Length: 427
Image (tube, rainbow, N blue to C red; front, side, top):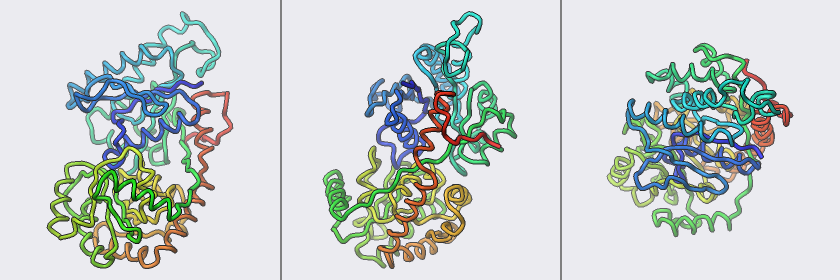
């Protein structure tokens, strides 16, 4: 059994709608576990009362230290993480850093420390070929899109250059698209370390009227704000409530359009999932507009299954949503209102052809009124919109099957054992 340690700064159960990278890390770890791997996660504690170890399904989570809050505490945490990984390394096959952040330095230092002098270690067949036993593979995932991407973080922070240098000490750097490949190579990361991760999507499942009703009743029992009638239509937004309190932010655009949307569709219910500094602002704005009774702000969720089943359409207008909410909405076969940003266009261009892209409900984030126009294009014929979303989801699963992503990860963790997946190197 392949033993993998995932290193993530953010990882907690109630992450959907609060922190997209945490949600993506949780989904990836659960996928690996479902595929028969022994998965553990090392992360930080974001509260003094949080337990140091928990188990989520088949994934064991280690919270080894409090979350750093500044440069000095970050350096101290990275040293502590590196030492902890050295202790755990002998029982692992791979250590994977979920993002190209400071943790990459800890992973690189741990691999180097464990490797030691290769002449003093017993040689056996392992993931490194004829290299030492019990020296795990070191990897990092460079992901995200637009303003939420890891490359943007590297450019905007003082430690970005050192993190990129540390990537050259790893065995692989996993990327998601060509722009990331070009960025890494141009900043000194060796091209032969880069490995392109294929997108993997599950086949969509139709949601019957009975399933939707049961999901809504279950959510209503959790939070009365989520109470709906059977004939109500639910518009969902899920993401971190950060940024500016204006229509320029994804949350702000929806909040400032809520009054117009509800006036047009009396049976509309809007669910805004998430937490962050804009939550109180959104609550006050909606109450001032007189629509707070039909707009729910229930916080964050650990399991979004019933939320997707209960919803009729979703608004996706933040770059951060491309890590988790966007692919989940596509798999759920929901009609999507999309903000025309360069990041969302790049993401969808990697999945669909131009003809399909033109069929989506786009709006211009610089013109809030176009969000309402995109909303009308879906709501005027909801049945047709849902049928179109289902066809897109089926097409997506056919173009990018989950089996291909499984083969990719197996080929990385066990090179030479299962290399059947099309995991082309970056060009």
